[in-house]
Image (cartoon, rainbow, N blue to C red; front, side, top):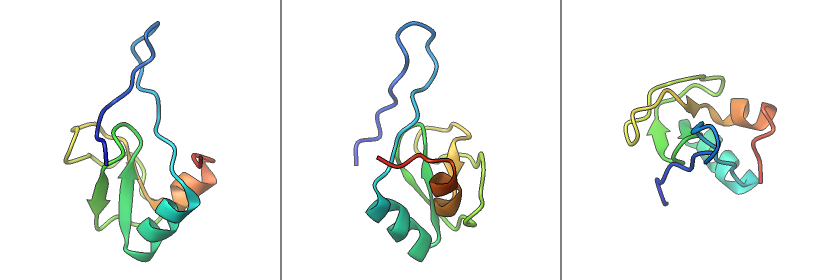
Length: 75
């Protein structure tokens, strides 16, 4: 997976990644979270995890699979 962070050119804020239903289901089944900044996976995340630190990009943007679904971050 591409771990590139996209930013809004006007204000520099991170543009959150969106995930497919299949990616969210896989994350849920394997108990890992997904980074909204770079898309990386993080192991050992609770389904309701919020703002965990990403090992790939070092931002506090890892969320649990169910939390991502509830936030409507699906493609």
